[in-house]
Image 1 (cartoon, rainbow, N blue to C red):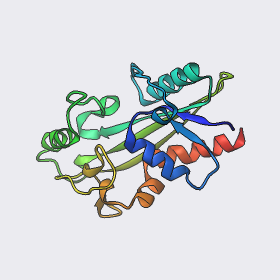
Image 2: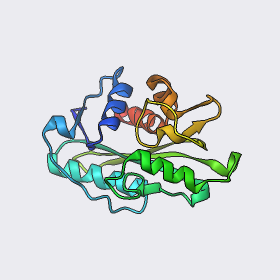
Image 3: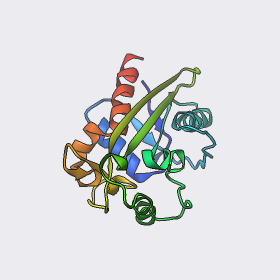
Amino acid sequence: MEEIILATNNDGKVREFKEMLSDTNINIMPLKEAGIKADIEETGDTFKENALIKARAICKLTGKPALADDSGLSVDALNGEPGVYSARYLGEDTSYGIKNKAIIDRLEGKEGEERAGGFICFMALVLPDGREYITSGEMRGLIAKEPAGENGFGYDPIVFLPEYGKTSAQLEPEVKNSISHRGEALEKMISIIKSL
């Protein structure tokens, strides 16, 4: 398949995609590297809708295959918040340090499974001929009582994975990518791309 435009301006996501695709012959071109300036409004009510909105917009703009994901943190005790508003939670310019502290504070007094939550990812591939493909992935854990770890980005420091005894941000990138919500969705998408 020809070059695929990766519809994101998030440097953390670009790094993860490149790491996870490094041993494939799939060629992705992030927006910045392609010289594309696009600020796509995510108006969907679900991660799936937002992924499609982004991929469709970039495919239409460039005439090339476009890959987009929408992902975020969903906390059970907070009725799935911050959900599709993960990036905009408490305001678009609010640091993740503040966002992470706010979520921890809202779970004060809760223990064990009462702190359940995790990451959800939906990925969309839109082709110029109108074909669309969707995959998804999830990484469940518990919301930590304090942030830990320097790897990853966003909410990674507060999602504790009991089976590893670490937060997502404490895992080595290759381990995280092999079990993450984005890794799961991308693995399924790689199979689709290879079959096209």
